[in-house]
Image: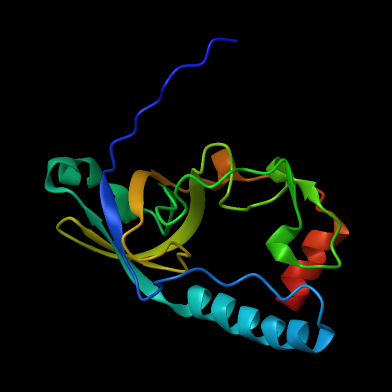
Length: 173
């Protein structure tokens, strides 16, 4: 298969109190792992309850017309702090030592062959070219690549399965 370069131009950026990602857990010390779990819960809770802003560049402002009619939007963004990191084929999800390594496409790790990330967030307000959203995990200054409205009939999945290790992460963190 022929490879070719794909170039993206950001449409804006994130203004957030999140300046750095959650650290990976310690590998060998169960006591330290328990401390990390508490830290991870607080970090995830902070994300869930934090507002941040998405600043859209002026040349794209007109493209926001009508987005205010939706309660939730899907943001595509770039994890700008992960530069030139080698992408492994497998990782332990969230670095959790007792979860067996999984293929990178079975995880939500930001370290991927193409580090494009998505997040569905609650849209709280729009003022000119600034969107205020709730629950966005992107770090401060992350480039925003695209915005789409969340449409349940279009984006909704039913009768889905998730593995037990994902349920563990949801419950424990």
